[in-house]
Image (cartoon, rainbow, N blue to C red; front, side):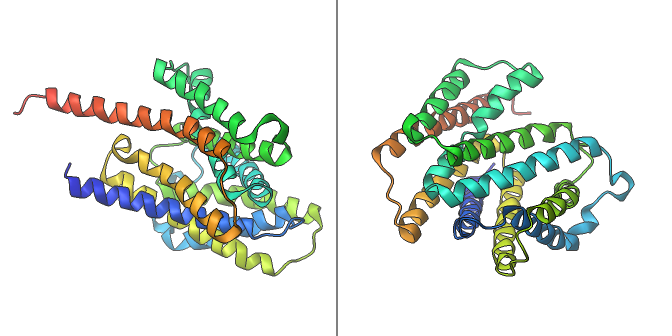
Length: 292
């Protein structure tokens, strides 16, 4: 693997995470009291429409294969969208994103509980340090429903990531995305109707911008991980927190305090060490292979 290819993948991930934070910025611009279910429905509908031109990548012979897992994952994702919106509206941009980065830690814990995987000593340290880091960022006196929503979003991201293992391998990424969002539409439409917030045309623009940025993130991540193994470049994913701090400071005058710096370091540094160790192991495995 050439250094040029790795650098290209890193740049794609940096760009992708910037796009994801721009989606968060769009959501943060929503006013408190915004009809959340209506926003979730519009965002899902627009995402489906944006994906339709790529429908040739859908395996029509196995269109609804694994539909039960798709259905479960779709509704977990819907819950995650709602939690994310609540957290971003009411928490500083960087604080919300730091908590979202607890998702990989939740994946580690749930992998043990669901799949019987074993935690390495470093993974165990990462889990403990990460959750302590969340407490440092929030501090017990500041834990409220918005913070709980951010944790709910992290759990949603983790569960969605784990359920990918149960989806048919024959289905492309576009297939999985399109089917997942299609399955969200009926529930989100019913919830929007039940919410009774009245049609808000301004939400259409917010939902469109958020959908475009998130699709851009998904595409850049897909392109990056097609070029190289995840362990070689996954640390670039955490540049999202740098984007969150910078944009939160510039756009919303949110200045991170010392507690945020310490807490986010407790979350991110152990995860970076795990990624570095995985990359190092792969390097030595390749070095040990005979040249033939």
